[in-house]
Image 1 (cartoon, helix red, strand yellow):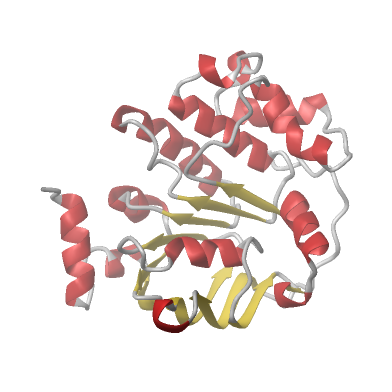
Image 2 (spheres, helix red, strand yellow; image 1 turned 90 degrees about the horizontal axis):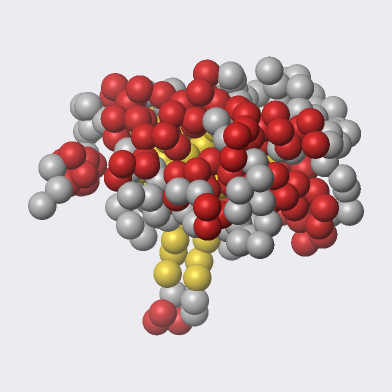
Length: 264
């Protein structure tokens, strides 16, 4: 069931196979001696309906890449495209509308308002945009993340896993063109990680275009079609999970994966 569209969308040319495309993207923070190149000439594509897992050490540029793909940040050099849209040419107002109507972004933190119920938190972005989200849509997305019976509860009455599932439902409510997840389980207690990953796994089976920054190796092995290993602001390795996660070619990739699988 994918018929959640609420707002009209521009028609996209069928020949554009990539939903997310970065071309020679550089992102520099700071100046002079304090300058940091978070991304250094990254070119990559995520196809429509694909599931891409992005992995790498802390500070490698993973979240920066995701924020650029979402129009939350702008590249210092290079171009970013979502479908047929070149994001570099959009002003801040157009980027805000793009994020409201076409991009579902799930952050590490849940970003829920404590005074609002789960239903109200899901409907809030549309209300802030001056639109009214049909209650049927709100209830549908909460049911899809297993929270239909908790829709009247406030965040303080929900576990961390349930709060993150509300955040996923909020992202789904606009029927986005692409779903972006920035380490969605990193703030959860270990026993709650599985329930959030199961929701993401179920969505992946429905054919959404999805990109996730994660350290969950076994999840990426089971669900992702493509794994990107980011190191030092560049794509060090890319390919199917059985290649990157079980037979990486670079020593640094092997060392990183081993640290995750066998933490000290």
